[in-house]
Length: 148
View (cartoon, rainbow, N blue to C red):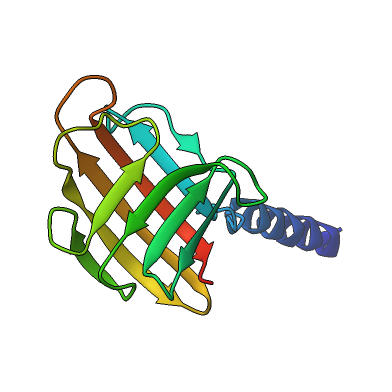
């Protein structure tokens, strides 16, 4: 009887210890980044819009985003003086920004920041501002777009 009590006591303690240890949480709240090209129009906190395809054409230092996955229907053409990581001022000579729905007629200011260009993929952010009416501000990101 004494052994049964010791056994049950040991079992109870082991059960309490087993249940009190917290299970390791492998589902950390780390944000996942999705490859692609997204932008917001006029409001930096507005709804994201997504291009069907995008690429950095290294030979021309040009970031292109398309409305169709087959690379047709140009939405954006961003010409830069380089394609290495860095900040490119859109009002500087040699840099230009085209978005098919953006107001035209006024100078475009802003910047493109390339944060990575390695392993055949490029990532970064951009913002472009102009005068006029309609869409006058565009904010966006490109993540792991192919470098061709």
